[in-house]
Amino acid sequence: MEKMKVLVTGGAGYVGSVTVEKLIDKGHEVLVIDNLSLGNRNAIHPEATFVKCCIKDEKELLSSTIKDFKPQAIIHMAANSLVGESVTNPFKYIDDNVNNALTLIKLCIDNNIPKFILSSTANIFGNSDTLIDESHSIEPGSPYGESKYIIERYLKLISKYYPWFKHVIIRYFNAAGATKLFGEERENETHLIPLVLDVAEGKRDKIQIYGDTYDTPDGTCIRDYVHVEDIAQAHIRSLQDKIRNREYNLGSGKGYSVKEVIAATEKVTGKTIPSEVTSKREGDPAYLVCDNKKINAELYWIPKFDTLESIIKSAWSWRLIYPQGYDNYTLSYANREIVQHM
Ligand code: UDP
Image (cartoon, rainbow, N blue to C red):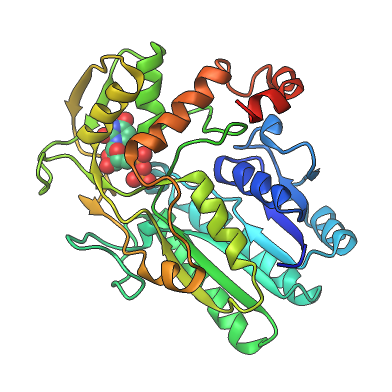
């Protein structure tokens, strides 16, 4: 594949940092735009160009940065992405997520940028007791899912009226795991695997299980955990010119319950993980598992990390290498070669 100039918004975030790492590994030239409100400066690969820019409030900087860099593709990952928060603050999600995407898509049209890859979400699908493929009925489970679905439709509309402009929509299931360089760290963590690992590390006393009366074998919610590096590879494959105006569901195709995640983490870490069952979280469907046949057939994508344990193990290893996460991380960079070859 030819080397490309790729702009990644949200490149300081969890999935963004790993996508940038893998793009650079493949020889692409990467520009990261991030306002660092959720992302971490130390999570930006040192070989990427970084411009700190808020898509919403710094439109002139955004426009001039894009004009200077002349990307051949934009991978748009910057977004608010918490289901629970979106239920309590829907305006933040509809307003920021939708308007920021529209701003970027318009900039693509104005600057002849022919490809736009959107990070979307399985949260656009409603409850289901079967694997979810691309033809599954759309019933966004939350304002977050709704915001992504609005952007999906807008992208399709613009691609119709500007035939040279192509999009790829990638709907993630539950991103998890870490590479040797970049992992999952947030200021206010709400995701299951990092919280369970916090308990294993002794940073939290116990994990709360949000409900055990769902219609699933053990009563807890089932999700499809897909490794962040596998997600990054799906984006890189989507850059191919022949991949035009496509939408893909991206998950491992296997579902694990909250209790299974806790048990697998106990096995990987060798620690006991205390838990307590609490009330259900609003917006949580019982079962969300991906049918990945389409992305497999068209992008030849298969997950390299194909077991829950291998995914959790990678996240645990990252924590052992970087016990302070991205704090003091510059120091760790000096050991990058060593770390990479461990
Ligand atoms: N979950 C839980 N306790 C927690 C965090 C999450 O039981 O402290 C459950 C949540 O209800 C969901 C699953 O774990 O069924 C995955 O949640 P997460 O927030 O990681 O991802 P989401 O599925 O919301 O994108």
